[in-house]
Image 1 (cartoon, helix red, strand yellow):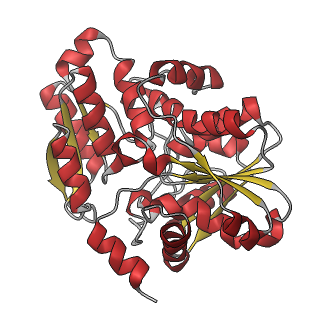
Image 2 (cartoon, rainbow, N blue to C red; image 1 turned 135 degrees about the vertical axis):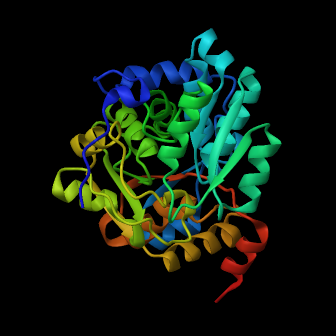
Length: 334
């Protein structure tokens, strides 16, 4: 089933879409605030695929994920009256923590609509950063409707987790930094949920590596982006059931999809089993804790050894927020 993109007015945004200039402005706002996360390499990983892999470690970002970039940029762009009113968002966890942290740094009250089954570590962190949490059932209730109701009733500024120009521009700074550090790449793998990280990354790549093939990666159970790209319009699916909780989005954003449709090379999928294998690799060989969603891009790169042999390939590790008991259960299983 397809849906029509929401009107720009729904989030107070203009009809024009974000550009590389927005990503560069975001980079200026984030300088000295967001971590410039390292680009890591592994001889074992390179041997596994026969290529040179460059891992952008956003699991080491503030709040444990790339989401801090977009959250801070969006709140920093608000005027004084909007900041005083406060903001509301909806998120399964990483954007929730990021908005709460950014709000605390900028003195802005934050309310977050989170699913009842969100990882406990993400709920605790969101509250720890000062955010007010409102729970909902992701399988029977609409977080967008709840968020809009709170925005209307409390006069809060709604900052969605991905379908927002300042958010996606902020996310694009991760790819901007990666390409600044590595130089042009032949291919780049980026995880795909609602599309903010991918859309922003595509804008950055268009400036610094225009010939780079950018690949979006979704969980196999939630390939709405892949279907949308093939059909040429936003497709919505039932909320997918996957261990990649950060990519359990049923459709791409009205602000992100046009950028993705125009610029992405392809969208591929990986299984939960491939995500677990990637998590285990990073834990055992690189001593990194990467959450399932954070492994989407890496899992796709590991599976594409025939396509990327001999190439320079970027991989965005999008986050590392995973309950340690859950992490141990996943990577310990064989």
